[in-house]
Picture 1 (cartoon, rainbow, N blue to C red):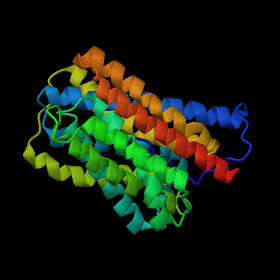
Picture 2 (cartoon, one colour):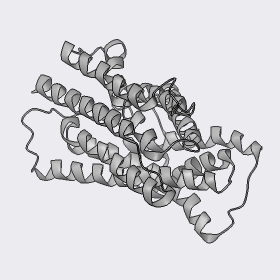
Picture 3 (cartoon, one colour):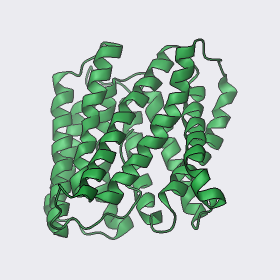
Picture 4 (cartoon, rainbow, N blue to C red):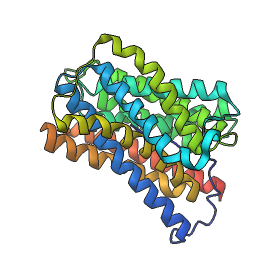
Length: 305
């Protein structure tokens, strides 16, 4: 999965990257990007082993919910489940569930690196959505970067080409849902704590995913498979939480670029576990997307400075 910011960004002006707080933010982001590729690889592996798709999605959210309650309930008590914006929380959580369902299903057919590369257009799409939904101003240079970034995605997808797979469209749909999810996340960040928001995300996702269990459930066939099912919730839940903490400690312009490190993890896991390696066009498209994203972050920093 791609990254999100559940808290308002601190000012990017004159940030000293060696300040202890900023270094802490970078470390949190590194922890996050270390968790998402293994989670996605686990999803792809369990799907290849023949486990029902609905069971995999449910396990991701059920585990997420259990781990969040264990981690935060002792500290927050009942207040962990108190939200000032229940409607927004519900819609936001539904959007993230849609992202997960689309992305997990797509991973049954497409490579980890290809899926990760396309998903990185989400921050670029968020830049476009920030104008009508958040009232932010985006200059011409950033609009050009947005268009170029989407061009990079088209290079990867190659619609109409012999390498095109329909499942890449699911990743595109995931990206769109994730961008809207980020818009609502920014809106609710001042109303609820990150712990409450993360927990509601898991709770709503678990409830909805329970419907998918009607398609069948298979008891894990080995201890290793049990470990993988349990680990999905921990990796997804704490991965998103660490992103929240990263943005609490440092500005987006400092920590966001580290998120692209997921491409390294996805490529390595894809190669060593599934014996797949991205072709040259995937690398070219990914480079364009990452470059556009980094330029947008740079321009946002210049505007805020």
